[in-house]
Image (tube, rainbow, N blue to C red; front, top):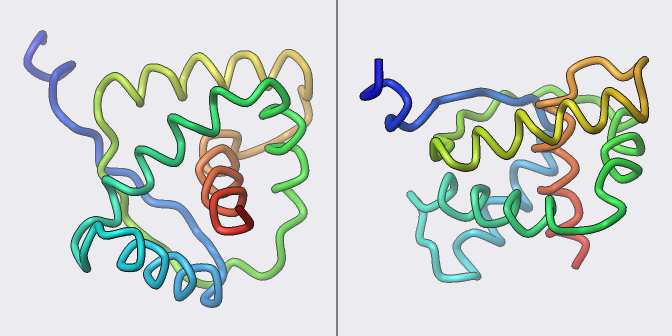
Length: 115
């Protein structure tokens, strides 16, 4: 049981094709290489969850355009726990939001791409 808690979690999230393209361009530009997408996204989510207004940004991500591309991400156990805690916080503030985990990941990616 303890070993399961220490393993990375592979999850998927849907994004638009244009976001996926911009994401890969940014990952490479930031020096993570073509296979560094998960590491870049993990770092991006960590930084995003430090923003005091991240719940509002997640709420805004619910109205994203067409999400036609599925991407796989490997999340560290520590980050997975932080995301679960963030989900609870967001559900208290915005109880009607569905797919909160995915919206957290999408919002963090979008915020980083806009930066």
